[in-house]
Length: 298
Image (tube, rainbow, N blue to C red; front, side, top):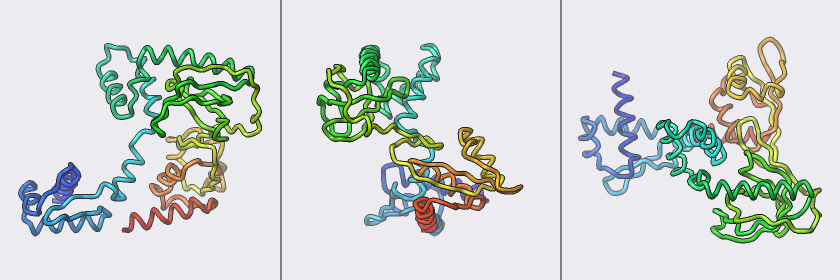
């Protein structure tokens, strides 16, 4: 009986998020239930945190409901993660149909098609070699014809390149015009030209930091957690690099002291094991957790 109930609720969620909207009678007919039962299910979804909209007599679920936001944060790859998986699949060979299918999906969803283009690979290789030379000489460069997806523009950028990462896909630079450290994609540069001008802003160069949960950025947020046995085990299993940041407090608890770039990753970890974790340090994290608790509570 309970399994049937949950099956109907999942079917209802799929109907209400499939891009259309339905009247109560249409929903009841599709689920093969009475309208009275349908209203019970709709009320249950509301109590569970789903945001239901009704336009006239038609229902739909708002995709900004807390459940969908949390689901998206947990399962969707970042662009860097998608590019990494795409590169790893290159080694599977052209005859591996499963690998080719996954690569094609990544290319469509994350717009990675250019990364696998032979012409783009050659151009990226040339750009990387010039950037390496410029960094060795501590010289400025012009990134000719840089295509920015954020500003939807193509322009030349004068920068001080100081760090190549992600196997040459990205380069960290100080941009002279904006006076900011930025990450540029080597595949989006038409060409790179070394300028006979030495770095003059080396003291402002900031390397990008990647936290235990895979988020990258310049700013760091210090946090301290007390972990129970379950949280300790799961953290080490899912994030082995966390071991140097963990100290044993006693026979029951461990302490995690680390910096994070985003509260999303560590926030998901804390919320998922809330009864086994205590936030000891990090006011921003404490506020974030309280906010997430209010959202979940509705």
